[in-house]
Image (cartoon, rainbow, N blue to C red; front, top):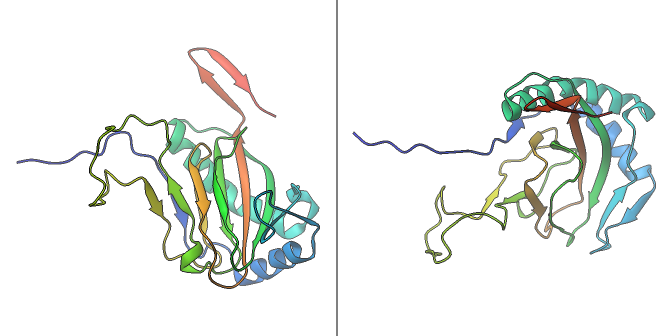
Length: 203
């Protein structure tokens, strides 16, 4: 008997239709009415400034609603229950033809995306393996399978879905061929980490 074991997998948590339509409408209004700046690479993608959840009641409610899932995902990552804080939020408005280059989120451990509007299939979030991996240098590029693919595309994304992933994961959005796409992104940190007795605390 033979079996395949996936060593050192990278977790990603998806919460389907997690945010209700009333909250989505309120957050969408914040995105459209708030002051935004264009992305450095394209004027078809705009971001709000960092927002404190306490500035808007609906964002405060969202933070409280998603908080236990962030903590659960954090326990999965670090094998220990910790207190987690969503330290910053911002909204992204992606128009037709816009895209987001591959990037990671610094100064955080868990990142999340809340899909405020439906995402056209062309503009679903793409995750990519780190370019510093230890793969074979000469490899077979024709068939793509679970263990040799460089990218993974989040499919079947609906308004109200939430995705949590480690902040170090490369991710981006291909050119949007559909209607305006609005997402809310956030970063979270634990209260502390302990490495062999050396504790570092975060505020």
